[in-house]
Image (cartoon, rainbow, N blue to C red; front, side, top):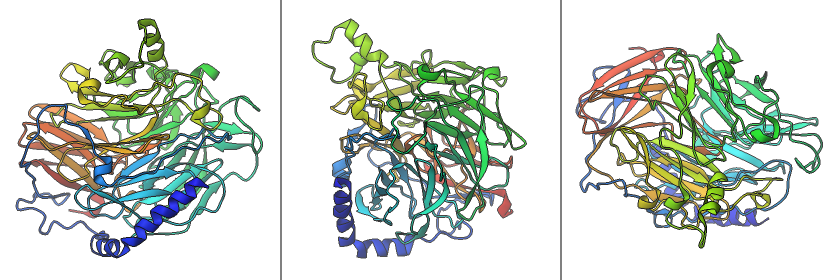
Length: 584
């Protein structure tokens, strides 16, 4: 009931400024059938597969990694606050958020999860400031929504809303001009038992250039109202695959069966691990002490997904809750770092031969609680060691925050939910956030210097990075339980950067699953475009810091195996990669 009252307040605020919103959406929310290069740059690339935006210059450069300041309220971010404490069947993860361009103006909006209905959306005013907007349709089903994400599922080049909950997947299509369709149930379990779905992922799994959904199961609920570990054991749940038709509809395509079946997971990712153009599936284990669950890694073999995690040393038993993905050892293959209940991130590092080794600690991705700006008073060394062992980070971001051509890392932390709410958690509530600076030899924690740690947070779950003001420097957005969401401002500097956008085929207009490799000044970087990762989603844009580079080689591997490439003689700009199906 309290949530609905807050929604009414925000809707009222949005309506007060509706004239301005209509004018804005009427002029910018018009995605062309083909991306135009007219009036975007004075030095357009000769390749018709790339469209270049204007180059930008920072007029007042900031130096150093200690560059972040909390700016949520200054930008206009006033809420919402998730403070639900109800006991329920599904483990509700608070603080879900997305930073995603919803109106095609090139700048991301922010959406914050509402378990009772359509997300709270803050529109970008064009300069990085935010205002409430797009109240959306009512959710009348009565069941809680567990997670939301944005992806174009009907081919009109506008991101649509997809939500999941106890035994269902629902959508609300983006019509443009701030208008959305009523919710539609696109997949539903009508009989008990039903699967608690705390997240989902998407990608082209069967090679038809149309996005599909992977919906992992957190818990299997035998009857209505049954509480895990109270009324029934936690035995895992099926992982459902839903094939899309490109028009917004989905059909059941079976379940994934990990080697350690049954599984329990709140994190899935669709990724091309071997760069063959086929999309593979990483399914991260959770609560491994309760059932010996292990992380599964399904290799896509002509549309057949086969879990070969034990054979490639990827079957790690963790409580996986967040994912960051870059090529850390520069061997040309993607690496995967995941959060767990541990003092160190768990990283699957490619060995260059199709296998992996764990390298989180050796990379320096561990968190010393003593490095936080504030720690509990009168804490002994032994007590601090216990606190560190119970550290529970969630969303993970691995991206270049200071544009020095080396990826940095950040994570937020909070106690795991039990019996539907984190209020029932039975581990330490001291859960500080952490940030690391990337160096030539790994990562160095900079939590205290950057002022990014505790600061009274303790309950952050959603994390995303996005360039809110279009200056080429990524802000950090966080949200959680009983705390206001926040934006960590990242002022521009003198280092170079490049941002890659995608104009994909009609079944995957945003190019999800594409791999981009950047070569500049003898250094190679690689990233893949992901969607929602547990409860955090960034923009459909890949960001690369370039340091002092003045030109770059850009290679794109599209889902399905098509490749495009170009050389850019100028940087500090946004470039759109166009799928080869649109011709030369």
